[in-house]
Image (cartoon, rainbow over all chains, first blue to last red; front, side, top):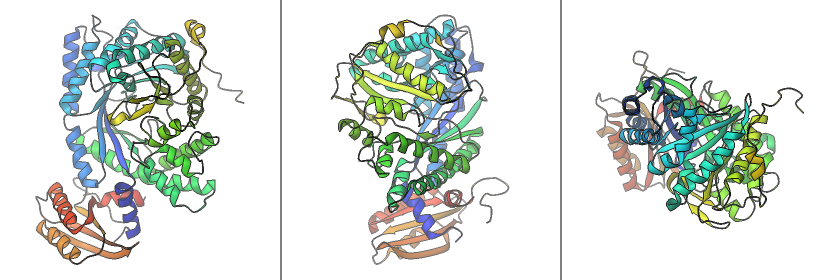
Length: 453
Length: 102
């Protein structure tokens, strides 16, 4: 046998015990050719294009799941930011487009569809503004639609008018879905330096530099990395880094195999592979557990940022070695509500919003799936977004904010979002106002790229 | 190492790795082999060992039937494994090649 028995057992163990999975196969579909001045005609074209391109996506994912014996948890679709695709439409019934996306997602059987968003890092067109204003209603009346808005890039700076607007939109989305603890906000991401080929929701959209249709794969495995580190006997950091790298390499190879075969069977191009340690509520399948395996009593204590920096970097190195098609976000995610270890750390008082913000400087994404008190003002949410955007813009990386100002909830309460999104303990925000700062508007200029100290 | 893709169709080969792990008991090999035979799976290679007190059987098996149905075979293996109180897993050989070989 060409493969050693211990290697076979290792792979089987990764899948059966350590929750290794292909988290998502996401089909990116361009809607640029659907543009039409008539809103109803546009909706028809959008529905037809998505349902024809993605009609076999779920079936083929199931076939590959059987073939390779590895769970493929989600199938999703990402589309051209709707603000761009729908710019030519007369009328402002953008919610009808969200309903179309929802219906198309249900017709092809994908559990989420991303791209109900806009790119406004430098400025907003009337279409961008109309779309953003429609987000609270769109997320309230649909089940599967996800929205993302890019408000900052390293090359353009931070559009503070958009940041101010998004604080109000997040707040309005929470209120509009108050009967479900502000569920709408779990499907709304505010980005800096948003990647155009990210397969992970809620932030996935099909970028304008992409082709007509593409398969992007997101592979995950915090449980595998956690188990590998815990097997080491009193390792030093070089050994930990080496182990993470090797593990990331193996996980990435598996993702590449599935991604290429999925693309081949679907007859579309293979885009990228995104190796991101995306936790699930399963015990041990946790990024916090990995950090704690390195010797921290609780995630969030001093040393957490350093541990996360090591983890994120080693994951990227292993992934980049394993595949030439690595893209998307690729790193470690720290969504609080989806990670049992993060939830426990917040509940134990070890992990605060401030520490999470510091952690986002060294990992992919940002403040993700954070619940804050329902009476948090729109300007405070905007200010939280502004801080996070600044981290992304200055450090030339993607950052994002997905925050839930849960209506009627206060610190100590828990928001039960349910399903894929888990549950989030409500975290404290700063007591002082950022109102005048956010009201100022304008743009924070793009940062200098030299004199880096 | 031999290529694992069919050169003409570029489709994956029809070889699978079957692993059976659990408490050792009488009849595991017999029962599992019976399912393999029923579905026309030729056992190309087999290794059997006790790892950490657990019976571990690894087989490289090739589907010989033209209308081989992977999902039905997996369901039959699951059923047999449940009856034996062991865990069985059927995965295409490429999954292991990709993960462990460059």
